[in-house]
Length: 321
Image (cartoon, rainbow, N blue to C red):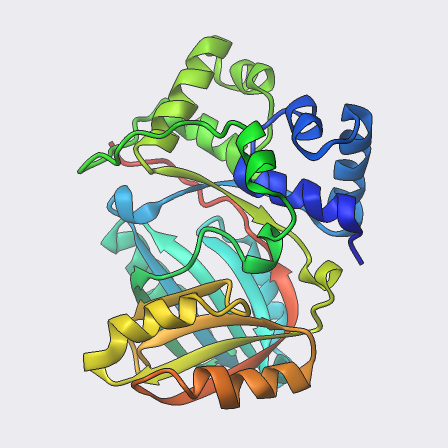
């Protein structure tokens, strides 16, 4: 379990993911050495990572969520193969280990077709495949439990980077690729190390990160093992909603503290969500009370998560101009 200092460090990273240990220490009231030591411990024992991600919707990419069922005994091998693909951002085993759910981003129609029509569809180990295209993400910037520790004054001390109004259209150039690849592996990589990797000056690195964050194409997410927050029951929900209530339902579900992610998608259901609960009793209460009370919801297919095969990871292969 995470103690109070651990949770305060995580909340501070949500506010400003690239803040120095000294800045983090000043905000939460402990020494820089303590923050650095705790951060290393969290990385080792709670899988804490700061991940730089490209907002594919602003780059003209399309996000997909795949739901696969495999022949008996094949799910681990197939999920392992999927985790090795640079296009997959996360991969999980669900429903007793008989189902795989993964997220990917397709930068071109050809890339999408190669994976969906040739790679997966041609595998004899895959019994069924449903591809859900993301239409609209209703999620909050961070899971509610990560943001309960710091006061407003403490958050202000972190002085998060000021962002500009998002641009109408954003294009990444070839020079951005190496920078973004390194941030996808470690969102807290120092400007010095990023400059050495890209061949840029540190001032150029700082400016480009500021520009990409300002126009909305680069975001930083906090990835952590939720068991440190007392969570033992996680599931994927595939929710059926009446079309007239879809937008309102997505917004309402996003406000539930148990839901770190919810989005409208194509496919046989209308919404896809991830739910994080303390135990199965909490999961049951959520499904029968909070979710059931959302207007327009008339069904939900629940897939308990069994194992995380791939956490947030890089999506590479070059960026279109």
